[in-house]
Length: 259
Image (cartoon, rainbow, N blue to C red; front, side, top):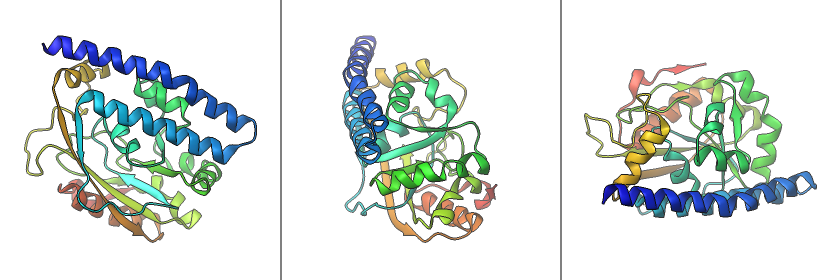
């Protein structure tokens, strides 16, 4: 039964990508023809449709609580646990991910991310992010929110690890507020990582297949109001604490930050 469930789900996910991929490429063509802002909004819409269908196919239920703040005109910041973070977050707003270049090579998720204009970094360093300042400004002006994972990598999900302050430099430079998002798979007091945590070097296809076999998944997601722009180190420390609070998780590394 588990193998049949996983096979049918995978076939459906591949079909969804095949159907939405032309629409995603169409948004890129719109951008080339001069409609940059409409193209960004359209790409976010295609990404959101893909994400919601993906969550439905995987049997994912996302608990967002009773209040979801109005997120606009700023930078989204979230902890990073799994490849599943991508559809979970994309399903809840018009976002544009700023992610490591390796994600572009992921099957299914990387294909779709590339087609809707995800901004890929060669490494989590300040100069790589600052070089995108103009592109991110255009994104925010279009009503789409850039989203970064300041931990710089997926973790075991048992704590929020130290933030790379350099990834947040774009906020004070642009005068943009930051919004914290807290994501969790499993119980807040868990001592063993969730099966959805992708942190141990397991090949993506293997990890994805295990998720496809499970009948359902529970995800906890919370968001907070805007945090005013300030120095990147102060912002990183403040946001790490807030993300940990929202996720109901401890903060690893004594809330230390890195450039």
